[in-house]
Length: 347
Ligand SMILES: NC(=O)C1=CN([C@@H]2O[C@H](COP(=O)(O)OP(=O)(O)OC[C@H]3O[C@@H](n4cnc5c(N)ncnc54)[C@H](OP(=O)(O)O)[C@@H]3O)[C@@H](O)[C@H]2O)C=CC1
Ligand SMILES: CC(C)(CO)C(=O)C(=O)O
Image (cartoon, rainbow, N blue to C red; front, side, top):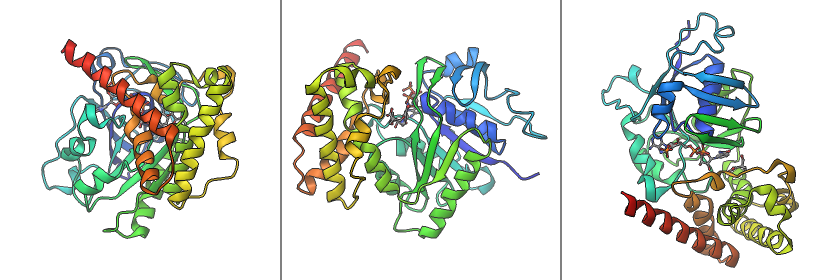
């Protein structure tokens, strides 16, 4: 039998739980899932999942589930769930993880640096790191710490939310594009091959669409047209993406002005986006879906630095005027400050 690919998934919230489930459906992986705040709930009751791709699952325990064994011939469950990042300190290559997949939110203030947190699980030059996260320049801390490891980009369209610890509501079909963040120390061909390898593993269950993305930065800028505008505006107003469309002309104008600033910053960076991108993104969510973008779901801290701060800094550096995004950024920083102050006074 072909040995299974060893994959560590860090963070089992809205995205990570569905990533883990999807990897299990493909039968090719020995999965280790790192949980944090939902660890105890999942240990006790498993995950409850309502997923448009995988159906309704009650008490799904990744480490002992029989799920998909009918399609996984001769498959024995080798999955584990842990609450700390495993330490692969020995030099034995056979203990190395093939992939470490990061599906945690990118909140530098609250979580220090995710790149350094995963380092005990990363074998230099061997483990490929896959960042299934929104935002711009997310690869930079990984390039600094792991100069010889391939770092892949995962752009997810999924609409998945952890509505209470261990309860995952997944509303839109999982669509993932995987490509490489080019590391100048490594050969592009090797990076492409690794992206294709991950696409193959992720697609194996046939439950989802996963494709090789050969133009990672263009696709990231394109998605930022939504993530830098709708995400913070929903988080700041408490309105969902449908309500934002119904809340009057001034908010519709604000959304489009913010989107145009990102379009201009993308352009200045050399990434020309489709001509109708602003109107497309401003109307992509049907009003009646009342979709909550991921930043509206953020409770403990908001993920605004990489979704808004980095594209804003990039645009300004290139001389693009970004008054709307600067204002949204300032308001997000104030919210983050308030959240942290409240947390400190409680702790
Ligand atoms: N949700 C969505 O529909 C989409 C999300 N995205 C992006 O995907 C990424 C993940 O988002 P999402 O799944 O919604 O986030 P969630 O907050 O739902 O899940 C993240 C999980 O990661 C855990 N975590 C954070 N840091 C660590 C750590 N150091 N070790 C172990 N676990 C950790 C969190 O634990 P704890 O609860 O303790 O903080 C939480 O359970 C983000 O970058 C987001 O922008 C992209 C497209 C769609
Ligand atoms: C664009 C969207 C809604 C895709 O699921 C997203 O990225 C988010 O919720 O942050």
